[in-house]
Each structure stands twice: as C-alpha cells, then as structure tokens.
Length: 143
Image (tube, rainbow, N blue to C red; front, side):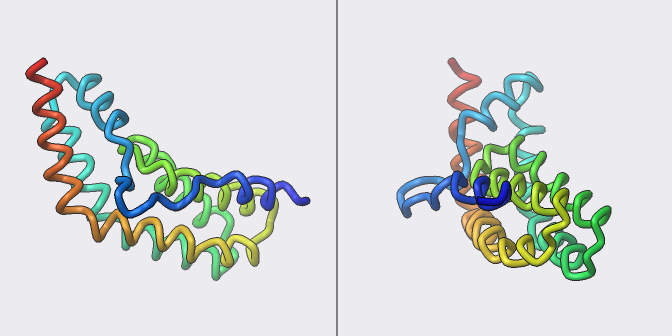
C-alpha cells in the first residue's frame, strides 16, 4: 500500500450528526493561551469565513499541478484547522500534503471531495459553532 493510501486509511471518520465538527477543548486551550476568549472567537469566525476561499486555492493549485501553491494552501488550512479543533479537516489536509510531497497530484485531486465535504460541514454549522463556542468559552472563564 502506498504511503498516501496508508494515511487515508487512518483518516478520522466522519462525525455522526450529534458530534460537532470541532473539538471544543482545542478552542478552549487557545482562549486560555490568549487569556481572553474574544480573540479565539474572532479566529474561529475568520477561519469559518475563509473556508470557501481556502478550498478554492487548494483545488486550483492541485488542478494546475502547482506544488508550491498547493502546499501553501493545504498547510494554511491544516494549521488553522488544528488551532480551532477541526480535526477531520486537519487530518485530510495532512493526507493531501503527503500526496503533494510524493507528487501524487491525481490522488490529491481525488481526495479533494472529502476535504470539501468536511469544510462544507464546518461552514454550514458556522453560526451554531460560534454560539456554542461563545457559551463554552464564557463558562470556562467563569471557573
């Protein structure tokens, strides 16, 4: 089995409808590190608003087989996803990163719909995620 297939076989499963697309403790840790929940909420809001553009950048780079542009876009999404707790998206970016590094652009393009699905769920749940995060971060500060 090639390296990228091994990575994809260990990718995070899709969350069930009752599960959040974000791991709340990750955002809580960011808020604690910043000593304020407002910048963490702002970062989450910016992350959510930038998802469509980031997917477009990744898709364009992959379709053009532009390793530098693809890598820049996928690393940006991977890192910001890790910071907000979007673990599924982070893992999918990691898999695509390995494919790009191995010059497996065709495979990376085939992996793109799963990444798109993950980011679409984050984007669609954005308003609820922000409300939930604001509530949980406020509770965390009061303790």
